Image (cartoon, rainbow, N blue to C red; front, top):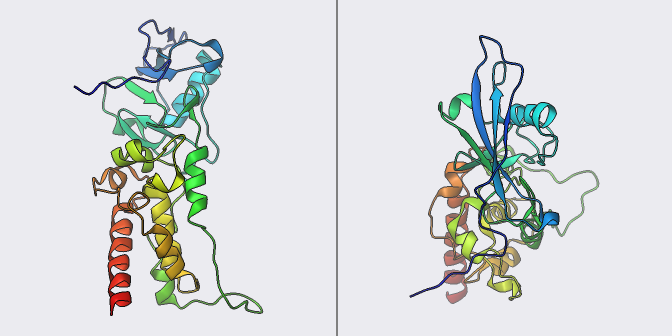
Length: 273
């Protein structure tokens, strides 16, 4: 029988705190919000705190979090910035699905309790704040910048048709919702203490890799494909499609990954011929 050992301080305690909005009128729309709480400085296991909040006039989950932090519990930690679905800072697991708090409406979450947890798999810094260091390192490894042999006097020109090839790729905001929803990434995305070439890069990094592979202005297509031609980096994708379901920008990382695989097959055929 396989035995799995949970990481230290990972089991959630059952003694979470409860908070309630004091000012409630007759037309108040009370909802219970349950938030994952963890402070590594205390050495205690995480807990889930409950907040009964008047949601009248609130439409988005991020506004709800801000109200909780402002009026009920200033110790709740979470990231936010643009509030427009552009920066990717406020990505959490909301009612079991990864997404952006600033673009997730309360009307999308039904009438029951609202459960907000940090992104799965990632180390938790505090509460809803996760450590994305490994995620960014994997993104940097695909060299996400233009590499051209010729340096033009003004700019790298591109036809409208070639530019349209990048649609569905360049819009990624690196919120990590897709990668942290992927079971293959959970198991193979962070080989702590192991070799970097035994890590699955994940949907986000591979989507960005495909973006630069398809860019007509880039002259490193063959090198980029050679770097990804690896059992772990690319082929740990099993087309589970979680990445597509959770992407807040409506992108399709699974399709991008399958196209990279097809390009590698074609590349091998050319080498044999």
